[in-house]
Image (tube, rainbow, N blue to C red):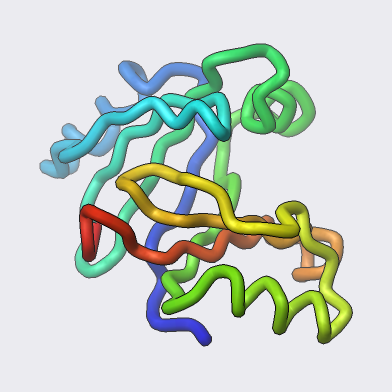
Length: 137
């Protein structure tokens, strides 16, 4: 099911401040986007074949805002590229894993995404992502 690590999500209070660290290391963010379904603004930074996705909440009830209140800034999730998010969810549900999303939804870069609950994945929030219009981000 897993093709590759697509990105590692990092929760931040401010994208503008957080990108400074990556720029200091010579990595320029290549894509900024607001993702209404997740109530976040994101910045993507390419690192080899994977990406770092910085996540800044756009609303106090955003899952990332709630995460920041509980845990502060830091690693938020790991995302795996898959061929079919819906099939991946069905496989995991059948195997007894707890899902956050019962069905895929729109994510950044025109991808289809869904999350698996960290209580069933060794405390790691896990995202499945299927490439959409911006293939290979």
